[in-house]
Length: 190
Image: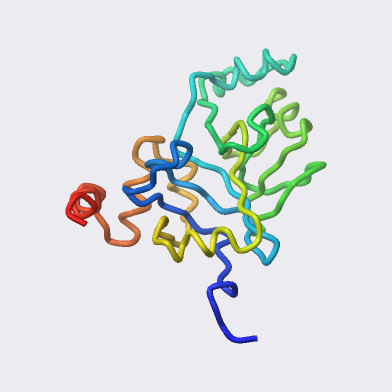
C-alpha cells in the first residue's frame, strides 16, 4: 500500500474551515477531531455557542444542577449529526459509561452519567458540552482536505477549554502563523 492521503490521522487536531467554505454548518468553524481512521472521522465544532446554557440543558433533561458556578456555561453546536443528543468533551477523560478516548487526557462522552456527576459537582474539571457532532464517512475528510476545504493543526487543550469561544478560531490559526483577516482577504482575490 503506497503512502497516500488515506494514511493521515487527524485525531487530536483542529480542522479550521477555509473562508471559501460554503456549508453553513461549517463556515468559520473550528472543529476538534476526536477520532479519525479508515472508517471515517468524528469531531465536534467548538466555537459556535448556541442560545442555551448548561442550566437550561439540565432542565430539558430533567437533571439537577447543584454546581451553580457552571449554570451559565454555554452549550455548543457540535455538528449536524444527532443534534438532539448531548456530547461532553472533557479533561480528564475519567471513567464513564460511553467515552471515546481521544488521548489519555481528553474524552468525548455521550452517556448521561457524566452530566449527572456534573450536576452533583463531581464532573470533570474542564469540559465543553455540545449538541450534535460532525461525522465524515470513509475517505470523505481526506477528499475535502484535497479540495483545500480545511486547514489542520495539532490541537491545544487551552484553546478548547480556556479561551472564550470567539477567540478560538483565530488562536488555532495562530498556531499555524496565519492571520484570519489575511486569509479572508486572500480568498477574495482568488
